[in-house]
Length: 435
Picture 1 (cartoon, helix red, strand yellow):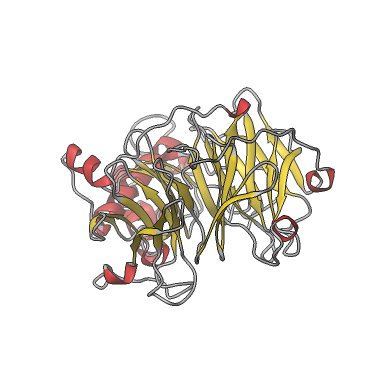
Picture 2 (tube, helix red, strand yellow):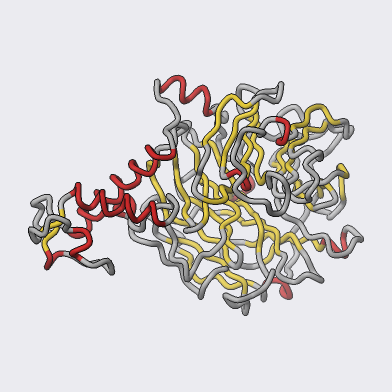
C-alpha cells in the first residue's frame, strides 16, 4: 500500500460524502496510550482489524481512538471468515480499496461496493493514475499463479508477473506460505514495478517485459512493505530482529529504528508521513515515531496479550486532517537512482562490514564519555564481556576492535545486524508487548 502516490476517480464514480456515526462498541476495542499532539501528524487512521475472526472489520479512528467509520466484512459484504489485509484510502473519491484472499474491493462511505475484482489477492493493492489497480498475491503453494497483476476498471488483466519465471538462479531462503510470498508491489515513475519477495529475502525492480533490472538480495530476514522516499532511498522493515530501515538502492543503511522486542514483534506496514514521522502497524498496535525515534502516538488492541494467537491488526494508513491529500512525489526507480549516484549494489559481505562499522561508531558515541576515541573499562556498559572486545588487552576498546567484535557477532547471527547500530537507542512504546 503506497497511498500517497497517485489516485483518481474511476469513470462514472462520484465522490461520496457522508456524516460519520459513532461506533461505541468498536471504540472499546482500542486504547490510545500515547498522543503528543504537537508532534504527531493529525488526521484519522484507517486499518484492517482481524482480532476477532468472527467480526473482521476495517476501522477508521480519530487521534483519540474514537471510531468514526467502520466496515464489517462479514455483515456488510455478506461473506464469512475472509478478513481484509491491505487498506488504501483513495482521496479523489474518498473511497477505500482493500484486499482479501478472494479479491480486491472498493467501498464507499455508504458501505457500498463500487468496484471489485475477484482473483487471488493479499498484502497490497494500489490504485494507479490511469484508473487501473495493481495488486499482489503472496499466499498459496502454486507458483503458476501470478504474484503481481494489474487490471483495468473493467477487470481485464493488462499485466502480470510470475516470480518463478525470473528467479531460477536466486536463493530461496523460505519454503513457506507461497513460492515467493510477494508482500508488496509499487508502480514506479519509469513504469517498472518494485516487488518485495519475502521468501527470497529480496527486493526486485521488474521491467514491463518481466525481467529484473535491479535487485537487493540478502535483506537479512523477510523484508516487508518497501516504500520509495522522495530522496530515492527505500523505507523497509525486516525481521529477526525487527528493524525499520531507510536504505539506499546500493544497500547502505542511512537510518534505522529497532523497537524494543517487548513492545513490537511483527511489523507489516511502515510509511513516512508528510511531517517526517513514520507510522507503522504491528500485530497488536499502531505506532507513530519521529525521526529521533520518539513515540508520539500509539493505539493498541485492548485486552489482547503478547501470546495472542492470530488476534492482530494487519495494515493501515493515516488520512490527513480534513481529508486534504498531501503533496505527492513520483516513486523514483532504484535502478535509476543507483545509476545517478555512480554506486553499485553492495555485496552481502560489504553490507555486513558497513553495518559493523556503523555499530562500532554507535558504541563509541554512546560509551566514550571523555571523547578520546576509546572506551575505557569504567566507561564500558554492555552485556558482552569487556575482554572479548579488548583483544589486545590494553584496557581500552578502539573503533577497530569494536568493529571486529560486531563483525563476529553478526556472523554468528547470520548477518542479521547488531544492536545499537548508528548509536540509536532501542525504541520503547507503551501498553504492553507486541507480537
